[in-house]
Image (cartoon, rainbow, N blue to C red):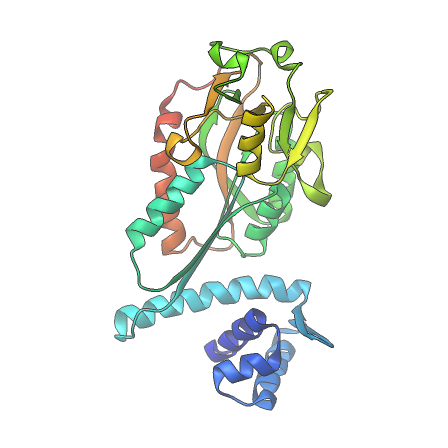
Length: 308
């Protein structure tokens, strides 16, 4: 296995066709095909599945691609630092539940990085996809929460995927409502207070198990339920329909505007918010910088008195 073969794999995965990858690499299609076949034979796996429209990654190939990205990224850093090569296009991806502090940390990373070329991605996505992204090394960091209801299932899923969970802080449950909602003037709200209002939750796709819900108390029956896919829609519905969502209570006025407030929810529960990383991969430089930024943006929450 060579670095050149790994670069070939990345190029084919990015383009989806042998012909286009060969053009970008300035080599012939037979040369590229031969290099991939040799690597597959050496590893004893099938990396790409050939189709009429090109190639797609196999399940084994997706896992291998994650490791290949890590190797090439580290090689690029070495070449840039010690061989005087020009700046390369560095890549970093984080997958997260819908937390404003995760976005703030991402913004800080970009400002600190200040490179001419980069390919950074932040995916606010479904809980199971966050786990899959980190397990398959599509993302180096994933951000989600545990509590007494989901931790057994979540920790089992982490073990099965060689993932490590690290706590950032423990939050008391809150609800987000608009400033126009009658509940906005209360210092706390109860579950009974919420009954007249629509409950907003993030849709979890085919893995729509209560254990993977982004909101606590997801098993609680409510007459009015609305599922959404993105934060902007959820906040618009909070304002337009006087809805609510159960959350950590951490909100950024700069990112989310002045029309949403967080009110403590009077329930005996908690949210242990943290990040997951792959046990077999040491976080790269960009991932480490991002984790440091996460800790800075959640330091105040972490310094609050812990729950009994």
